[in-house]
Image (cartoon, rainbow, N blue to C red; front, side):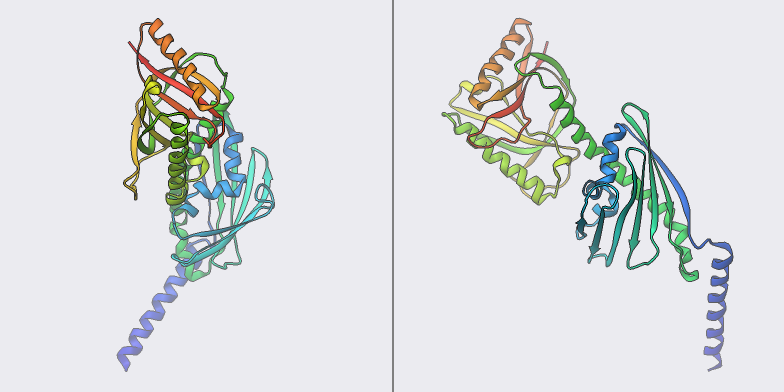
Length: 346
């Protein structure tokens, strides 16, 4: 009995010593600042922060768990917008509010975690340091913790910094595809032949062989695009701004053949494991291209392709595949809006 009293006294002493050290040497809340730079203009970056539907697509706090469920509340964007979330697998829940907004300059979030009445307050500042570069500064004020929980303040900043590092990688990927789409649409000059250097691109898609009779080829393209789109968005959980325009790669002059073989894919930022053997990754290497933009029925693209081939022959250039980039989703019985790219080399 005396032994247990001694053990209990030691435990009480340790708890008292721990509580005293936490009380006198560890602050009840913590303030810290984290700075990052990203190579995109401030107006495009800001929209990924003040629109909470955009925000939750790339922020690692929400994307790191496949079981998190998020509800969005009006106005969805800007000051006054909010969300609630629950993650049954990790037994967490909370609410986040966007309390203040100064467009392209400052935001203030409040995050209430696990029924805690005191929020984490995060001020995010945006500064354009170049036309295509933005500095982002997070200023974090954590909620007050009881004496027994103050030890958590030792790893709060590291955990927050790790989350931002992972989030910035995802934000870069999201903006990369979004900006590429915006730039391509802004640069369209229909029926004009131009020269363009294209960087390496990773595509997720399928290889196909099909008939080239009448409209059979285009119907087949629409069907297979829908397969790829559904697999990418539903099975893989990718959002619209996480991938680029669909690209069809085929021989430049096979429009004359009775049967056509092609690869149709959607650009993604990185490889990962696939759950369906019908799909595969293909790396499209960097090339110099002769390009034309075309809008009309799919059969009418042939004239534009012939112009690209004639240009290559006139310039005594060898040529490889033709790449058909659909700038609008291909739909049956509809016109196409596309960029035709003929890879050329000496």
